Image (cartoon, rainbow, N blue to C red; front, side, top):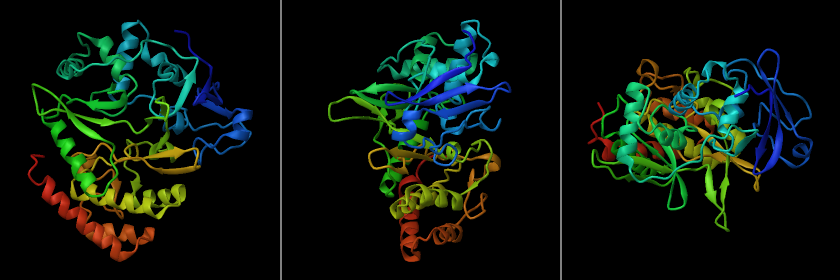
Length: 378
């Protein structure tokens, strides 16, 4: 596989622009002239609609802009890609960022696609979830799996640490997770309970379900929010950016506060209801001990017809910790033990009416206590 030096970026079949590697291995970007007159900024702060060559910093995305780094698999997906490359006698460390985007091609999360692409295989469908779980565990423990091809086809473009597959369920795009090597077998039922509780707390969630297993209570699955069926039944893609991409910051470093997320949501959406939605999520994360609330676990979706950004449905909600057991995103500067006063301080600075904030806080706290107190989380 020869190393790429240049490639084009597309959205819904329309050319967005061109990526090209510089001598110092940065990946420059330039919008296409037609996109400049008819398109939208694919990253609102870093890539405004301007006729110029944009040059990223070396870090935190290995010389890429965050909007394109979001397309790359992370964690589990990157592990599968690297193992696939090694099997084909290709050194993963010799690939540049354009090579990795070419592997993604049209299979990545969100709406951006890349050409030329290194086509490997097309996705598969399966209902033998227990077999997939066994293969995932083999992969984690031994760096190989009996049916590696299937794992790669179904999970090679995914992000996050836990094993997962991207598949079709009744003609719609779903993501199904499996236990990691350190997870308890009931991690799926736990995440399902968290998702149901979050929805009960007024938090927007994609459709979720437990997929059957003979080994455990089930595997957690969620309908993808970056795909939808139009009126003609054709699958369409939704442009999405994580906070990590928008702010050009690594999700591996706890460097955010909910004050920042509130301000970002206000600037991007200009919608008070979106601030309320984020406040509910912050309260839930505190009361449900979901502390892995890093910058890749918050996403904004773009509606081209309405020319507006809005928060995606919430995801990756489980009992969790970040570095040092604290929240990855601080609450009013407090990552260790944020409480009611910190939550209300964030609401006040965001302009949320105090009485409304107090009501929401109490509602979420009570529902979390009633729904999740019975779960074995330690």
